[in-house]
Image 1 (cartoon, helix red, strand yellow):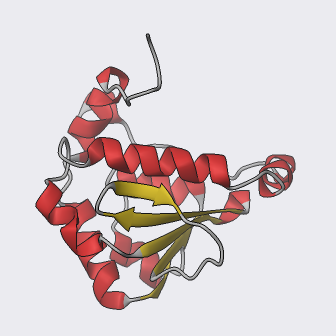
Image 2: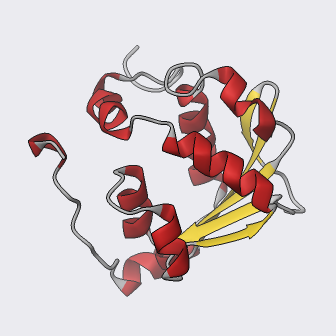
Length: 156
């Protein structure tokens, strides 16, 4: 681990924060998740690696925030799912555990067997997604984030 990517501290979100977030609409965070995923396709993850995900629905739950984001993978990119929500794959963890996964400080299998990561639905799809995420050079991505520009967001 490099000096600029120190281990993230474990934390618990204050209950009032979770209470507020759980009552907010999930559409805007799902939209940001879809745009972030789109920004990574072709730059971080090859388009052909994402092809097996097309036509599938995903639910990402941040347990300690009471927030579930529903996203579809389409030929045109990732989109916010419309109700009724019936995800092919649902993944849930705390915000701290998702951060630890992204930073590769925790292994998904370890979190799964410790019951800190829940995966429900199409297990084959879950394995494709896990392998895809494992193939990303997250330290490089995290270093590049300030310089990445998402179309329609940021400077004009």
